Image (tube, rainbow, N blue to C red):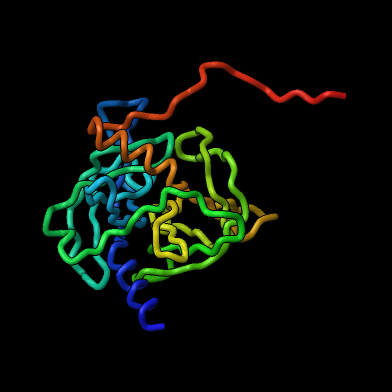
Length: 233
């Protein structure tokens, strides 16, 4: 209906396209640098603890020399700065100019983990076009999964909506138009199809709370011992 279409337009207003120029260090020759590369991803404005923050994936701005954001319906790109980067959880906060967020309706965060079979929508800028894209799917699994970027394992939500290159950093919304997580990776091999993973709001809240409290990435706790599963016969 008209009200739902208006809400979806406001949601897309808070989702931006990220343009990053990467310059990875040349570790074997630290006095030199590797050739630059470019990539695109997604980011979004989020209201949390009374602050409006711009969030994306850490791997989208890794080794960033230049980060630029483009608002929906505009041609002009705005410079951004990475102010907090959490490789373990693959999340990053971007600092933008104050006037960049004028007219933007930030998304609200849902602290509850969605239930299995709940419908979710993924917003972002995947490859194949310049405009924002919306895909829809259902929650199919909630489990601890390895995060490819940080080589760690944290809670993740598996959905059957397509998450392609460029979707990284985009918000995932529930049927109340609240953000339940951040799209960040997919499982692609010859035996799988439409398996995407979402960083849940619980992980995002921990990351943002640490940043707002200290101004830096505070990390995640570790139990301090190794373990392995045993099987009784």
